[in-house]
Image (cartoon, rainbow, N blue to C red):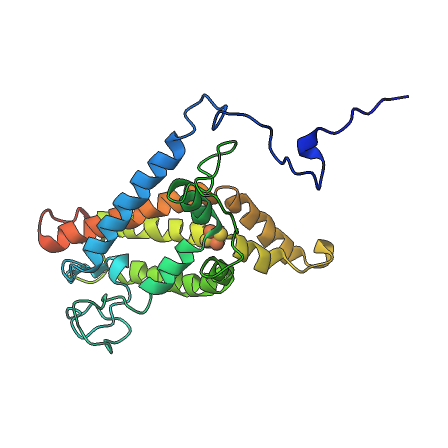
Length: 273
Ligand code: FES
């Protein structure tokens, strides 16, 4: 016969004391603050760089090799330099309007509502809570039950927009296999291609994508193709956090490389033509 120990006061539902009465704010002695700190530094640096670049309105297109930075894709204002508008230029070129005004808001919302980024900025910027076993930085907690956080539920719809934008970025990467003599490629092509591969990996590793592919099924055995796709996406999904950071890096690197070649800071390293 086994004896069950009585539940502790904190574990008893309905009791007033939900937490043990410990005076210290946290008993953690490790560097729990390091992850939130590095997240604040990384995300802030990236947002500053991207904002400056988006409103710079220059050095985003290399006409010679057809390189277009993802921050200006597709370029749709009447200010876009010749050759950079692959889908028409139908918006006015006011400085406040990004040249990629059609896609940037959706990309921003896709990342803002991403399950991983939510965890990252809830912990690091809102301290809600900053780490496991560390108290919340706020007195009240309502989760995502109220406006505007209720809007996080729209993530599944932003996924479709991000999917289309990844197709556009893929087209940009293919279109860039160009040289003044015809076909050609250089280091810029490798960077554009690498960025697109990583963007696809991040996009399809999305939790919403995983649910679209493998959710609402009663029997995987009756849907072998969806099961295989779901298995593959699940493998990527495990790396979603890493892919979120890697794509911030590849986006900034791609943009910087295109800017540097467009500005004439250095020449593209050409392998063929
Ligand atoms: S959960 Fe991160 S992109 Fe969908």
